Image 1 (cartoon, one colour):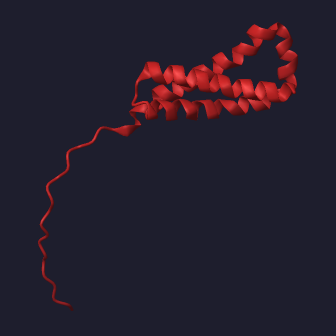
Image 2 (tube, rainbow, N blue to C red; image 1 turned 45 degrees about the vertical axis):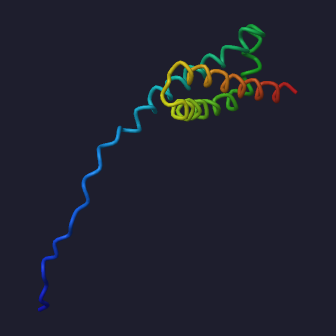
Image 3 (tube, rainbow, N blue to C red; image 1 turned 90 degrees about the horizontal axis):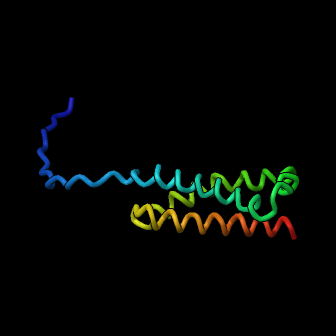
Length: 108
């Protein structure tokens, strides 16, 4: 059998606890989802009930933007330091622009 010694290691002083960084994910996700719902309502406000016929064939494209909108909401909320007002406005503008680009691309 092998002889071994207990080696005492000097520990560095403990680091201060950091704030939990996942606190921005839920408000950002909610803002992203609400922005997606509001952006989905924009074509109805512009074109009225005829938008339903357009969405009949193109709904998978707009449904695919929902998780993208949630991730954009989380990312912008994180990048803007958790400021809810600024991240809400930035998310609304970004998601509306994504919807506008997709809507115009499908119309053209």
